[in-house]
Image 1 (cartoon, rainbow, N blue to C red):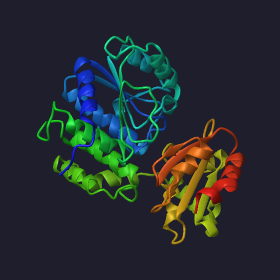
Image 2: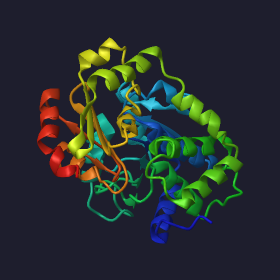
Image 3: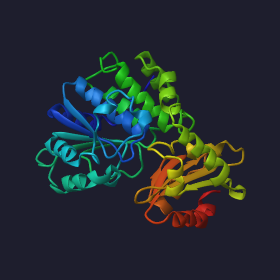
Length: 354
């Protein structure tokens, strides 16, 4: 049995905003991953089933291995057409954000969210700004939303979207929204944000949700194949290079580090999504319990953190690298050089990896 998770008052208020809106925009975070895509597209399928006019905006290009998701090709990419994306936001009766908790995670859309929050301090009933519903599972949500549905105990935003929609009184389990397209989006988000159920996935109810999604038509084997078995040759050679040449292991603290420059990435014809999962690989070593992966991006160093068991990495990510996340899976960033980021790691890992 799947128990209610979200506070009834939040569900009621969110339902009011959805009922009052006709034109809705769903937004997810920069560098969208499987959970970002799955949660936002699932919301789109649900809202369209309710007769709403819905658009999904992603801040920048999503990985090619997620382009098969139902509805993904209709997403508006802000970086490619900011004027069209901004026009959609300005015309919306309601904006729903999934899988992020603060404006800066929306990339260049952050200015829109900041201005929208600043337009009025009145009650939602009289406020002229565009109302926002946040559905997210990260720590420390900002005050950007009128309704904040934040449950870090959920392993993925897609699971939280599923629970949110399931609790809404306007549908039930027999509703037509539980179709293959919607369910595939939810399942893919859950699968990818847990590393194919390898971490943050020890909750029995999660698998009851998976069972319901499969009954609705999800082919879990096909989802896995489309996400994890569709890389190009350069990605495979990059993985070999990371493990053979770039991985540094610090056995006294059970830590592994992989750091890649933009020059190295270019050598392997790096594409969006090619770094997916590399951070998990050092954890296959028997005495490595912490893994950190960092790479040069356009204007910053992007970092991923993973750990095993009762060993948190989110505090390391938050305190040193302006990030955060879950106990065993977190992210961060550094606005500086790769050498600086590596030195920050070297100067601090002993404190956080015990």
